[in-house]
Image (cartoon, rainbow, N blue to C red; front, side, top):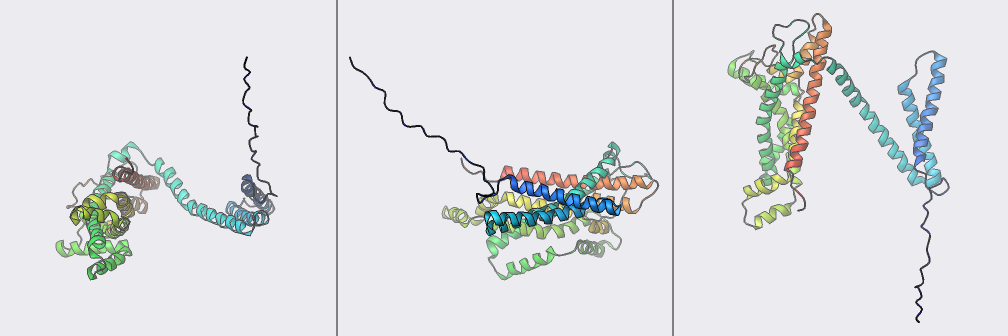
Length: 369
């Protein structure tokens, strides 16, 4: 009879217990910064509440936010320096300053967005999208002619600017290589970047006035004025994207006997298409809201016009400007149409950015297999 014995079991060790950092462990707990922030807000709120009750005036919201932010920066720096050391305290101070600066920068953006959405939605209606301002005085009417004009003029400007900008950037990166012509082009592009929009409008008006005579107004004039503003943005953004393409890809293509033009079209451009698309959409977003050059070149119209080469053409920025500056009776109807036009313009810019992201995602080179 054999007796089997079970193998000895290894001693069981307890799982390590992770302790929450304490103030005396050299690290602040995760909740400590939030607690300091809440304490700063409460302390500053009590201070400004006492001041408001003593003076009989309203609660100073802006002053409360400023004092609370400064108090938080002082407290988090001192407490962190005492517990975690001077280096960590300075790190938390800089992090707090950057966060507060970001919040301050977001205040006007959020305020403008909320104001435009609230006032713009109130002025929207089915008639706003289906009719123009022809023979409309006072209430009623719409901005269909302005929406169509904005789309046509901006599309024509993009057709003019995008090929010129992309081919110029290709020459500067792939062929120029620091030559005299490339340096001259770079200098002119830098100068064009800082041109005021009204100067671009004056340029387009002067060119057409020399050909057709003074007083000419056409949609294509607005497209040319916008293209002057778009071209430097497209050139700069495309140039930077092309420079980011590794030279190893070009050299590998050349080693296989592929010509340079085909390397550019099949290797370089597809690799940088996402960044180029983003730059193109940024340039369109930069000019779609211009008012001065379009007011000077395309003019003001109340009727539909689908022909860029004949007659005046209305755009959304000019429509909003004219409705607000030339108020009739009742004035609120004109103000509502101006806010609605501004809201539609923001929506168009947002749609363009969404389309740019989709195009960049679809056409960007796929990594992996």
